[in-house]
Image (cartoon, rainbow over all chains, first blue to last red; front, side):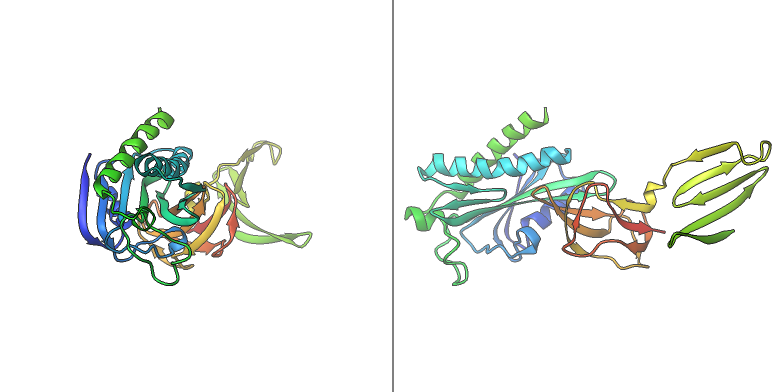
Length: 175
Length: 121
């Protein structure tokens, strides 16, 4: 698994799109400890301080239906891995969010670049893992694993589990 | 020769060309060829559209942002617009260097698959 690690980056999706356009191999993962301009759907800011898990995966070129399926599957996979790893009950809010105790814990954004066909695709996943507190405007709608569990979690292990599951699922839908 | 015809308040752009013994008439993207040997009876209609001149939505969704202006010269790979569709965000980019003739959509507009979004020169 090729993982490109950064301390700080503008956005992992942005970086993954740049890398993909330069020919970097599919399934390369871009992960950053901090995102300065992390974003979700419609350009909405994604709070990305130190402690969270922010990563993007360069997806293999696929048809648009497969890409939509993997986007929806990603929410299920994140919820499944969190449930199995920490014995909690996450809720999937389709298409792109995972909630824990009624608050958002994960956001997913797939971006495609389309000309005469799909040129490149990346999927970005942001998980509030070890965030200790949120700004006032997010306090009622966001939470973190650390806040819910009362202890830190291993971001690297979580990343590896999610990517392995996503790769396996992608194989099943595109074969 | 280019001219316009108005039929029942609808205007049609017509392009007329002489090509040897034939006359070519182009109306609304369709080309008709009239052979001279049998007068105007022998008509061959072609419906081939120059799709490279139109940016057509391959997905149904909502236009989030438009990054170009009418009359703008655009390089290959430049982002025309972002379309939110099928739970994803899709950047529609220029396949080749081109010039934007007309933008047929607005931000926040719902579009259907197959709908023409942009016309290029």
